[in-house]
Amino acid sequence: MLIRSLCLGLGLLVAAAAPSQAQSPYTLSRTEVHALPAPALKRNYQLFVSLPASYEAEPQRRYPVLFISDADYGFPLLRSIARRVGDGGRGLEDFILVGLSYSEGDSATVSRNRDYTPTPRRDGGGASKVYGEAEPYRRYLAEQVLPYVAKTWRADMGRKVFAGHSYGGLLGAHILLNTPKMFEQYILSSPSLWYDEGLLLKRAKALAAEHGELPAHVLLLAGAKERPRGSREEGDDIVGDMQRFEKLLRAGKLRGLQIQSQVIADEDHLSVAPAAFTRGLRWALPGRR
View 1 (cartoon, rainbow, N blue to C red):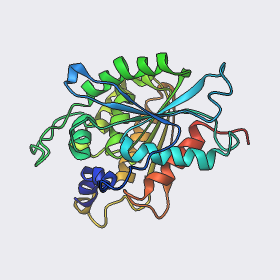
View 2: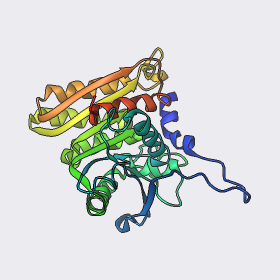
View 3: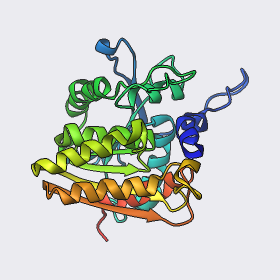
View 4: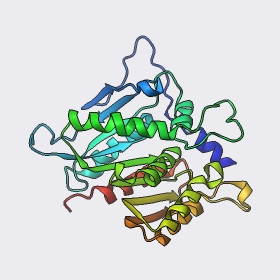
């Protein structure tokens, strides 16, 4: 399927040409890279961190913190959006941005296929054979990443935002349905809810049937072109799955849940992310205007 193939290959977009010996690498100012290994997973990861311009000038202030998956792509994108749209706190509230890196030594495709999916692939997964470790990766985030951020920076850990696109959105949906209190807000852009024959749609339906609680604020986004052309077999219905997910959770009248969705005109699975994250930031962290 076209969309599925694009989803699995999203990591290719972040590949950059290696600089020659005569060149120096481009770096983003006011950013930090922190190594944070995951011993239980036997892998090494990094956190990419950008602090707001007001951080040093306001030493008593604590900031909301936004965690973005697929950091090679998502971190510089959200940082640029925040600086442009933020407009010195008028367009967006100042916040700490934390990028969640791919595992060291693995390609983007291998890392995200493994860490962002909730179950193994039934077809074996092709060249990237390891899938289905979203839950161990979620535990790494909960047990190591969040405590590290809390002790290292002046983060308001009562205002945590998760943002992810495609498989990153699938990971966010997995966290939402299993441990919703890990984050207060979820920005899920084009989540791959088709995965494993709609597994998370089935889990959402089961959760709704319990009529319990799901304390989180959720924004779902997708591009208008993320629908199959003709029959379902000609592409995954990202928009339809997103709307079904919202409808299922709304039907459960789950306590504490606030959920909404947006379909963005003229965008497809790859082009929608910048627009989705711009809307997501304005939704989660509105400025003073």
